[in-house]
Length: 147
Image (cartoon, rainbow, N blue to C red; front, side, top):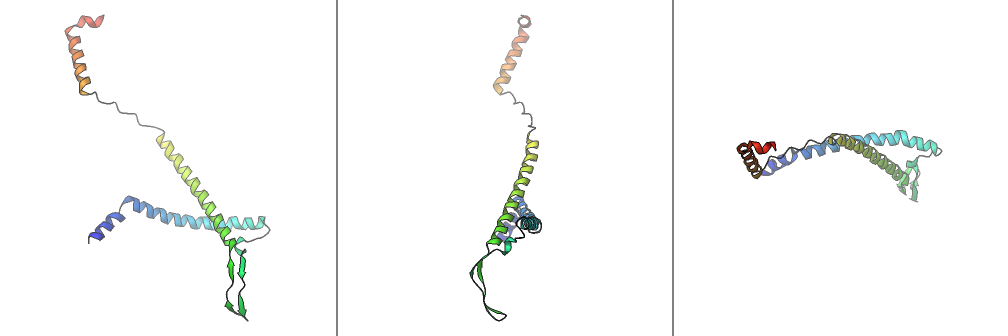
């Protein structure tokens, strides 16, 4: 039972909840960016490069062995075009996250720009005693004050 209680305390901490929300939002954001790359950017790159589709690029190490319609041994290849697609995905995700973090930091800086006034420190006991002595001396000799 102690381990369940400890797990509950761990899971209900604010940091764990925030991290879980971040992971879920990050996964959804990743899908959005992947769609942006797959459905918008890469077709434009394909048109700009003469209709090339990067995911089709590969280096065939060993061709497939077939017996009629049946594949006896599948093709062995390095799919470098898929890797290029993944790198482009990563660069776009990294750039989008950079822009988001930069925007959030700007919002935080605007809040921090207005520093709170520093509270006036209370006088020390020594200062209080000296003030009392000064006031007593002034009260005893009011003509000294006018000079």
